[in-house]
Length: 361
Ligand SMILES: Cc1ncc(COP(=O)(O)O)c(C=O)c1O
Image 1 (tube, helix red, strand yellow):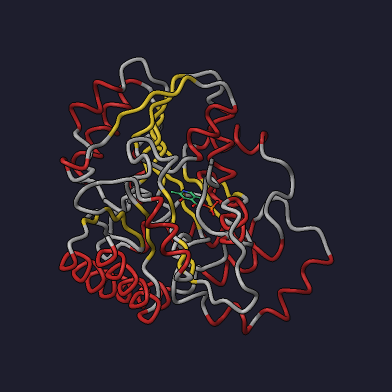
Image 2 (tube, rainbow, N blue to C red):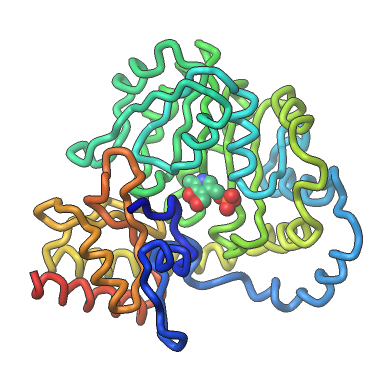
C-alpha cells in the first residue's frame, strides 16, 4: 500500500491505512516539521487588521515585502523572487530547467524529483550513506556533476537534519560556477540551526547559485504559503514571467512582513530546539535507537537491526502518534522514521511509546 508522499495531514495517512480515529482521540503529529512553539504572537495580535486585506487583490509586484527582505538580508531587490511557498519556486526552477540533466543529493525532499520529472528533466542521484554521517563528499559530488545542468542541495538536509561542511559546499559551488551548472541550495530549515549555516550572504558573488528560503516552517504558517528565492537578476526576471500573477496572497505578504521582525521568536526557537533535541536524542540513544546527527527540528530514527519500520509506525499510531514514513525517500526505503522535535510533554509521550515498542519486540 502506497503511503502519502509527505508528512503532515494525519487524517490523510489514517484514511490511506484504513484506520478510524475516535472523534475525541488526541493525535500528536510528529510527521510535520514546523516550529513547535507555533507562530509569533504578533500574527494573532494583528489578525483583524490583516484580514481586511483579503477583499482586494494583492500587490502583484509584492513591493513592500521584497523591500523588507532586501533590507533584512542585504540583497538587491532585483535578486529576490517571492513565491507561494518555496514549493512554487522549486517548480519554477524545474520549469526553467525543463528537459535538462539534474542531480539530486539524496535522500532528500521529494518535491525536487517530482518537479523535475514533471518537466521531463533527466534526474540522477548522488546517494549519501549513513556510514558517512549522511555527509557530502566533494570529490564524489564533482564526479556526479559531470554532464549536469543543475544540482539541488537541501541544506540543512530534509530528512536527515544534517548540515554540510562549508568548505565542501563552497568547492561544489565554485566548480559549478566555472562549469555553468546551477546550484539550487534549499535553506528552508536554516533558521532552526543554532550555528549560522546559511550561504545567502555570499550568493551575490555567484551567477549560478540560487538560494531558497521558506517562511512556513519557522513561523508556523504552512497553510498560508510563503517563500523566496535569491538568484541572479536575469534568472529572477525569467522566473517572474513564468510565475502566475497574484501567486502570493495579500495576507501572506502582510504576515511575511511581520515575520521578518521576529528575530526574538527565531532565537527562542533555536534555543528551545537545540536543548530539547539534545535531551530527546540522548534518551533515544540510551534506549538503543540510532538517530541521524541532526542540527535542526527533525531527525531520522532507526532500530539497531535496521528493519522495516512500518510495524513501528502502526504501533505508534495506536498510541496516537503519527510519524513520517521514509518509504519514498531513496536509500531509506522505510527503514527509518522521521520525527520532529515537539514540546516536552509530546516528546515524553513519544519516548515512552518507543520504549514500550522495544519491550514488546
Ligand atoms: C526542504 C524543503 N524545502 C521546501 C519545502 C517547501 O516549503 P514551503 O512550505 O515554503 O513551500 C519543504 C516542505 O516541507 C521542505 O521540506
